Amino acid sequence: MKKKGLIVLLLIFVLMLILNTFTPLLSDDYFSAFIWPKRVHLNDVSYEAVKRVSSLEDICRGLRGYYFSWGGRVPGGFPVSFFLWQGKEFFNPINAFMMPALVAEIYWLSHEGKVSVNFNPSYLVWIFFALWAFNVSFIDTCLWLAGSSNYLWMLVIVLAFLIPYIRSYFDVNAFNNHNTKLAIGIFFLGILAGWSHETTNCWIVLMLLYLLYESKKKGELRLWKISGFTGFCLGYALLVFAPGNFSRLQMQQNTDSVVIASGLLSAKLVELAVILFFHFIIWYFVISFFFKYKRQKEKFIHKDTGLYLVMAGLFILIACGSCLMMFFIPSKGLRPSFLNLVYLIIASALLFRLQEVNEVYVIDDRGKSFLRCIGYAYLIATIFFSIWGNYINYNHLQNILVHVKETEKQSPKTVLEVSPSLTSQNDIWLYGSGFHLVPLPISEDENYEINKTFSYYYGIKGIKIVK
Image (cartoon, rainbow, N blue to C red; front, top):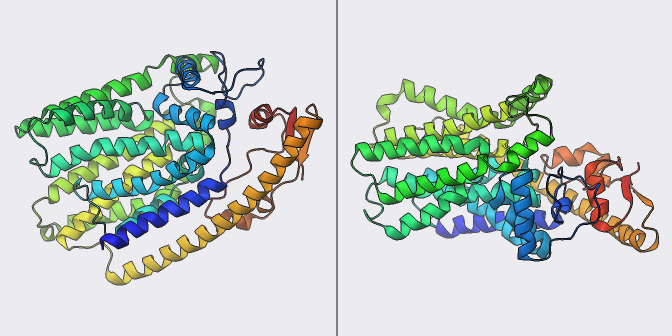
């Protein structure tokens, strides 16, 4: 069992490494490779030449400018600048490792916070399947350099921070009463964890407050719990009260509204519908479980049943709260839905675990076998199309970069016209890959901001795709 579980994690790592290798720099990556002056809009390259990031001092200068001009996600921004300086080939294996790390953490959280390598392989496969199939923004949050650093990496840190709290919740004797090293370590880990995501951390604060209250009520409040909570709140304050958040609102002329603008309402409703569509199966299982539990409560006789239910409810609260925050934040984008998904997966995994310890199941064996066959077929098909389609796009981009370098040397003031990728001309690649097809980092509009930053990065006047 142990070897099979580790093999599953290794296979996830290999798959992610292949996909990371085929994923180029995208979107904001090109802009983030430079040190821009303060109060500059993201991807605005209408300024004089600026210096590329080439040292740790440059990274600190860039992050300082970002913190005071654009946003508060400094811990997630550091690896972006660092790997743009060192090269994406160093980023690929580390980012590939983060996915099996996330899968393992979800497994540990659903198994009473016990950190062990004795994995049940079928659990691991299901967790990865959910992260792969139900993430509407997989490329932006798990493959894109800037997106992965801010979402996947920071989620790994947040869940690592939560593991001791969950372990202590299920087993009060899991840690020493006066564990000074843990108290110091979790304080600094809490700062990093709190300094991560705006839409979820306010709900995690409420979750931690509840856990502290329960500990206090039972006379089990420990120094490390208070220390970690303090660090988390400090990190969250550094995130939400960053001067860059207010500066960005002012630059985008949104200071007259702190809630969703009326013009964004229809777009927000569409986003919400898309998120619910992708997360529907998990929500169906969660709701079905609670109906099953209500009808057959007498069968759930395990002594910790109440603990599992409360913990699952807390993670459901975080998922729903994050979705609510997404709806009211006055900007578009599906990337934060990855956070909703992860906490929803943890909640459903806890309910799976509750069924296991009570030996009461929502889905019978025949239903499980059917769903397992469907799931494996989907995984195999989409992974095949994803690797093949992204390999085609990778080779096409390498040919484009050859022409870009020639243009830079021979006629840098020429707008380069390039052909579209084969995969973009046939939708079967997009749907066959399960929306895991990485697009080219340029579009048909030479004035589009990403085309401009791409051109600035490579030292040419402009570039566009011509069909």
